[in-house]
Structures are given as C-alpha cells and as structure tokens.
Length: 177
Image (cartoon, rainbow, N blue to C red; front, side, top):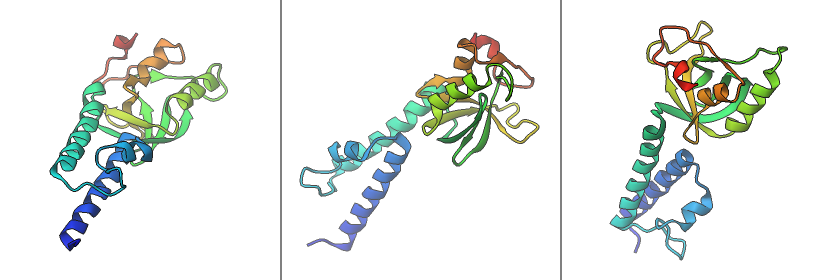
C-alpha cells in the first residue's frame, strides 16, 4: 500500500532529479540509467538513492565552483558581439579585461562567431568582478567559463580580442597572455 508520505517522497525525489538535470546538463537518458531509478521504472526511495542524489548534487556544484571560481551560472541565449552575451537569470554580461572589434570593424564577425560556437545554448559559469561588477551601460562584468575554459583568456590567446584593463578590477588580463 502506498502511503501519502511515500508519494511525497517520490514527488520530492522527482523534483530534485529535475533540478539536478537542469543544473548539470545531463539528459533524460542519463537519469534513467542512474541508480535513482530502478530497472522497472519506479523510483527507489531507499536511503542509498537519497545518498546518491546528495552526492551528485554536491559534485555538480563542487565541479563548477572549484574548476573556475564560478559564482553564478546560466544558459547563454544570445551573443551580442565578441565580448557581450545574454545569460538566463543573470542578464547582459560584458567580458571583463578584453575588447573585441565593434560591428563594422575587421575581426568583428570572427570574434562573434567564436563566442557563439563556444557558448550559445550552453551553460556558462561567471566569475563576477568583485571590485567593479557593472560597466557604465549596466552590464555585469565577468570572466566567462564554458566547460571549465576561461573564454576571456581564449579570446586573447586566439587573437580575437585585445587586453582592456580598466581599474579597479580584481582580474589582471595581462596574466592570461
């Protein structure tokens, strides 16, 4: 007999699984193959399932935070240009410490295409500049990470951007060269 308490636990586990899937980027198939759902398709309410869920959740946040000092993350849904993106739940982000060509300038499209390829539709991590977190246009200043890669640094290394250091900033873009 299924009690209302059992149903509440199953509902809570399903909600937590959905949240983990949303944060980690894993697919429905990954969840089905995990130990949280048994082979007959029912939710496992045992303490080991809860333990696995807790471990998975902590691993996701530890990986994001330790790999790149990520303070916040979200999905990049628009690339404005080579150094500006829009991120769900955060808003407009200006890559701190770098400057890419403006529309009409040589290299503009290449820089924009590189950023599109790297982050459009993906979860990006942001390390927001603690010394100056907004520019004069109200954009959040941050180092952008995709799959643990510092995208600001990659723009410099690949020649799509130049250093643009404007104090105060907690970041030294010259160290990325």
